[in-house]
Length: 536
Image 1: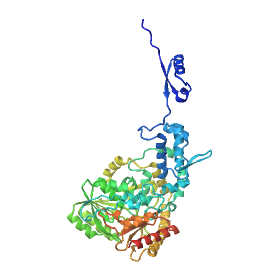
Image 2: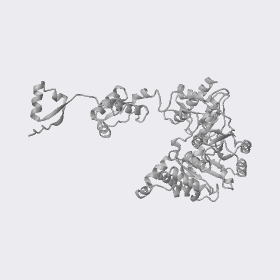
Image 3: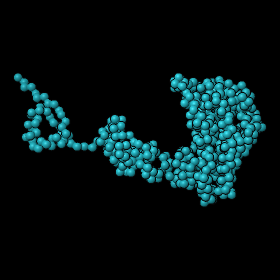
Image 4: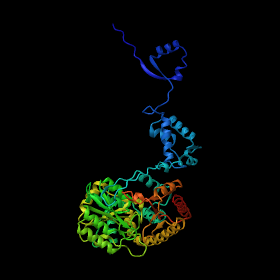
């Protein structure tokens, strides 16, 4: 007869309990009595899944990084130990040790009966380097110079992203931004509109919208075209996520990789990455700071190169602020129509005129349907809502609609509803008149300050619309060096080289006048003037 084997039940016994069984005989008796096999569990420290770092240190490092890059703001309450315990499936002890580690680093503090908070004194820890912005001395300023009038690949220098992060960073005095200050925008009216939206309307708003955009918004835009463009209806418009998406969709509808696009020079920096992504070649046609594109040069380029499309900003170009006269717009349309070359018209700044007469759109002179007009509310009404539109004309409407449906499906319904209701109130024109008056005075203050504090050899053109100043520095002064020195003083500007794909405009900078002129702005411009004087 085979004797049955003894069944053992495995049980994990904490080390401090086993330690009480001081000798081997005692442990043996305990096993025989309980028919269990005890496994001694020694104290250990939990590692993360990769085994490279203790879990509490890994958690402390991650939270610490979020404090340094301003994801957790100064004074903000951190999640409680129990919250992170449940969310991350970590023991409370692990979370607690991570917070103790952060306390030792001076990043957080415990407040009685309140929890853990980011310390206000932590600013001294992370101010040494701002989020996503390298120190100026490490900036890569290699610039590839090419012949602007020969088709060339658009390959932006590596420092461009660095520059754009700085110009949008809240810790800088923003003298390079092309956006209006929020205090100039009709935020109170938008707030009232939000409160008046009924639950039934909100239910409909939460659904997808049509790829072409909200019908009421398109109707309101069509109403505004009276006296500006003939026979424009809601069906003729496509709503986009800002003007840049409109420009991108238009380029995609017309061009293919390797095609040549004529752009003005200097050009809006935001279009250069689009050309690079689409693998298009650029020809940079020089532009007069007062009257815009040099048509004689454009005609010479057309004679030598196969231009697939032109992309221009005839009304208050970025960065120069030039305004093309109506006679020149007619001549531009005649020239392009003769060669069957489409024109993509960036009209984003058209509403920001000062003299009481709205500039005409190039599309108003188009008889062949070759002009696609793109615009948005980003420079006048609500930058954060990202509402733009395209007037493509019958020739390109279907192609652009198909691209829009596949590219971004549709725009946010709530944003479109807010703008449509604001326009339907009939206050948009009154708001624009007031805004233009304020901007004209505001820009004049900036110009006066620049003339006061910059060296005499510096030149700035007084614009007749828009909020941008294109500043020519004294001979031999490098805009990149001015940018670097300004960055050290927490002042953001835009160096001229980012407005060209061929390495031009090194002795230029762009200054934005979207913020109301204050003593702080005055000091910032005075500091810039001092920097320029030192670098001459």
